[in-house]
Amino acid sequence: MKRVLKICANTWDSASRDKRELTLCRELGAETLVMAKGAPGDSFREEEVSGFNVYRFSTRPLGTARWLTPLNQILSLFVWGRKARKFRPDVITGHDLPGLFVGYLSNFGNPHKAALVYDSHEFEIGRAVRRSRLHIWLVTRLERFLMKRCAFSIMVNDSIAGEVQRIHRLKERPVVARNVPSYWELDPAEAARVRSGLLEELGLPEGTFLTMYHGALMPERGIENLLRAVALTPGTAAVVLGNGNESYVSSLRALCRELGAADRVLFHPAVPVEALRNYAGAADMGVSLLQPVVQNHILALPNKFFENIQSLTPVIVSDFPAISSLLRHYGIGLPVNPESPEDIAAAIRRMRDDREFYAACKENLKRAKEELCWEQEKTALEEAYRRILS
Image (cartoon, rainbow, N blue to C red; front, side):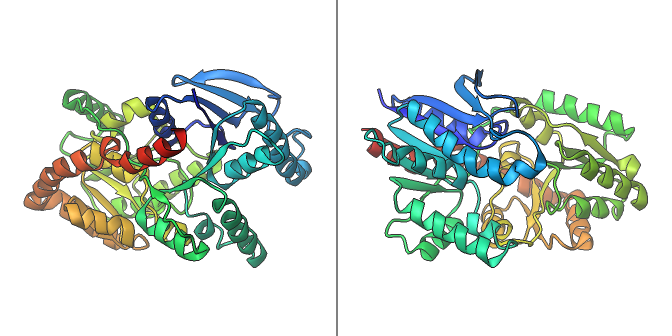
């Protein structure tokens, strides 16, 4: 039996894409293991997460002092590479560039070399453009060096795959596996119950038009402009579903008070992925409003977009090429200027008031839901893994 090792330099808490990838490997007859980040004091810890064996290692082998961070980052790459070798994997799939680099190091001088797979969750070079020129140069050269030593690479959409192939002058185009969930079986009664609970917490009537942002609470995700747009549209409310840095969340609450919209915005902690369909389905509209601060955002196809589709929830999205072209193709919402609260507010009003348009979006979502699910999406990735696992 072939052994596939996933190397992920974060905590593997939000790992739905990795889990789908590893489940596919299991379906092809492989054994799967995961290396992930542990707590600062974890020299080694083993646990089961969603049926996967996860081995946790510290990324701070020298200690937790802040001034040691750069040294810890460098040393942990080599420590992890040595530990990965002990699993004797046949395939190593690296979650983003750090995971791939660890996999490469584990192969160095190793007679039992693993086939490398680069599982890129972002447009790495596009994410680095806010750094120094030296940082961009290093990321570009390292990614090119490692990708040319991989059995194949995985990108999250066609736009990023094409750009990466062009930049690195690759002979083969990376495999595209968009971050789409498996087909969600919906429970309308449970979604209605969740909706009633959310509106009850807000103290608002059932007929209130409910918008929702779900995902990590971080700057540059458009949350501030969503709140400003809600403040501009009486009769609407927003649920901000997710976790984030306490000081940042406090700044969002302060903005709500400043806008006079605190009584129409509910901050709700993140929910398990199994329950997310009922929360997304409880909203009248979902949003994905990444700001155009880096090319990674402009070319993105966020998972929340596909999760709204699986919940049959119309969406408004940033008018960027990849996401807006898919939205227009299916006719499931409205593209907006993510930097304009007025534009977002106008889209919310149209969704709320143009019942014929809204009904058409809901109907079109049925086709999108059937086509944009993991069961349809995994074909190319399955074929790529079949080749190296056979």
